[in-house]
Structure formats: structure tokens, C-alpha cells
Image (cartoon, rainbow, N blue to C red; front, side, top):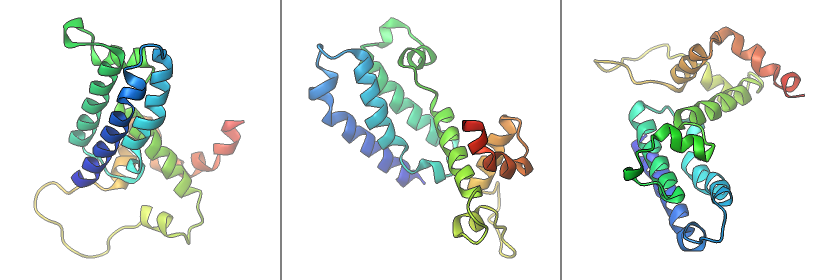
Length: 173
């Protein structure tokens, strides 16, 4: 998993660097425009494919630090300004990294749940191992564990998930 996070960080860093002279340093371009491009290009590169990953707190913390560094540089905020990370995100109108990842994971889970039961992604989401042994110590988290935790935080029981996913069209109208 760490190698996937490294790849996402490299992709976001490359996207940010390519726009440095063309966009970030240009004073004639409004901050709002820069932030919209940042969200569309850099955040997309950073979050690509993470909706299907099991992320630990260290991964989310690393991604959050990167987002904060880029946003502070983009907005001209230095450590001397004594502006909190929450305030930086508020000014940029961006959610926390954990909220962005949770939203994309729940969106992907809803997509999988709406699939027919014969489809492999759905079968894997609900699969349970029948045999085998695990290593000593705390078991590694699985994607299903992450989704269950996010649902619990949202006050949704795992059993309600299929009904809520199928009601998606009704709630969007």
C-alpha cells in the first residue's frame, strides 16, 4: 500500500510542479481560479484509485500534509501567519483528506452494491475466507472494515447499505 501512496504523491507533485511557472506564480490569475485548477488537477492525481484502497491513519496523514503544503504555498500562507490547517482548508473550500477519501470510498461501494451478484467486484466485497491462518498480532484492515467503520461514523448499519445504494436515484432528483 505504501508504494501506491508513493505513486499518488509523485503524480500530484509532478502535476503541481508542471503548473508552477504557468499558473501558481502568475499574479494576474485570481486565487479562486488557481484553487479550481488545483482541485481538478492536483487533487485528482493525488486521490486517483484510492477509493478502492484500505488506508491507514499514516497514509491519510501523509496525504493531508502534502495537501496542506501545496495549499499554503498556493495561497501565500507561511508559518509566521499562525493560520491553522482547518482555516487553510476553509479558505480553500476543500474538505479534509479523510472526508474526501471517505466520500469516494462510499461512492464506489454504492456502485459495487448496485452491481448484479454475479459480478466479481461485488462477490469480493462480501467474500469471507473459509480457511487459512492469520499472522499473530492485530489483523490487517480490509476494505470492508474501512467501509464498515465509515458507515458506523455516519450512523448507518451495514445491513442498510444495499437499500441506501439502490435509493441513490430517488435521492438525487
